[in-house]
Length: 485
Image (cartoon, rainbow, N blue to C red; front, side, top):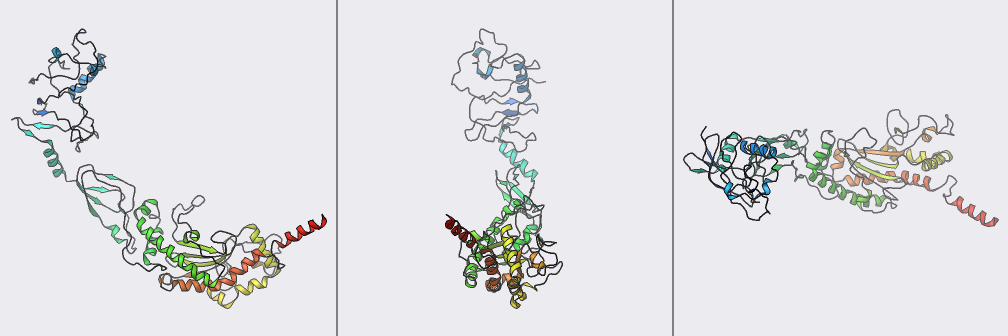
C-alpha cells in the first residue's frame, strides 16, 4: 500500500496521544480554523480536494468515509466525547493515529457555519445528502463536479410518471433527477363525455430544477357559454362526470373545481331569475337571495350506504316561508339523462302536519279530489289513480302506508288518500327542454298548474276542518277562563 503524503494542518479534534499536561481543557474561542485545501488521496487513485464553504445553501449532512467512522468508534471507545470543544496544541498537529496503524490523511472538518453550494447529490442511492467534491486529476488539473453531474443526467435521461394525473389533485410526484420532462398519464378516461376526452391523452410536462407535480387543475370550458338565466350543456357534462362513481370523489372534484364554479354560478343566476316567474303565478312566493333557497351540493352520507360525497344534480326549494318551514313548496332540480324535475307539495311532513291533512281528507275529501282530477292537472302530472309500481299524480310514493292508518277502517272509501304520507306531485323535463332558451317559461307553466294544489295544502295546515284556524280554539278558551274569573 502506498502511503499518502500529508500536509501539516490544524485539526479540529484533539489527538488521543496528547499527554494530559497538554490536553488541559480551555475556554472556547471564536477563532475560526482555516480549512486545508491540500488534495488528499482516495482508494481509486484520484486526489480529492475538499470543497469550500458557501453561505448560500443550508448545511447538508455528509456521508462519513471509512477513516471518519474508524476515528469516531475509536473516540467513543476512549471516552473522548468532549474532544471537539478542546483547542489543539500546535505541537500535536502532525500526530494522527490510524485504525490500521498507518498514517492516513482525511479532510479536516470545517468549523465554518456556511455549507457547500451543491448540497444534494441526486445520484445518491442512500437517500441522504452529501457534499459534492471537486475532483483533481492525476496530472493536477481540476475538474468541476458540476460537469460530471450534468453528464450523468444526460446519460440517464429518465422520464417520470405522475401518479393521479387527471384524476387527482393531492398526490405529489417529486422531481428526483434534476430538470427534465415528466410524462403524465391521466389514468381515468373521458368516458365519452364531451369536453373531457383529452383526459385520456398522455402529455409531457417540462419541469425546472426544484419543481414538483402536485396534480393537474383542469380549466373551465371556454366554449358553450349561455346568457344568465339559462342552463348550458357544460353544466350537464359536469354532472354526467359525477354520475360515474370513480369520479365522484374529492380528488377529481379538486382537479375540476373551475368547471364546478362555472356551473354553480350559472345555476345561481337561473335561480335568481326564476323567482320572478314563480312570483308572477303565485304572489305568496317571496323574492329571496339564491343562496337562501338553493340546496347544498354536498351529500349527507352519515346514514347512507352510498358514500359518494357530491350530489349529481342542482336543486332549489321555495315556499311562502322560504326553503325551510312547514308550508307546501315548489321544488326544481336539474340533472342530465332526463332526470330534471319540478315538484310541488309536502314531502314527508311532520306528525302534526300529517294529522291535520288527514283530518281534512276525512271531513271533505272532495275538494282534494277536484284539484288532483282537474284535466289540466292530470295532463301535467298524470292520472289520479293508484297503480302498483308506478308513480303518478299523488300516488306511487315509496313511503305510502301498506295498511290503513290508526283509527281508520280498512274499507274506507278514501283509503287511497288516507294512506299517503308524502302529498306531492312531480313533472319530468327532457334534457332538450332544460337546455332550451324557453326553459324558464316551461317552468312557469308547470308552476301555474301547481298553484291550486299548493294553496290547498297550505289551507289544510293553517285551518281546522270546521273552517276556523288553529288559534280560534285557544282564543275561545281564554275568553272562557276570563269569564269564570
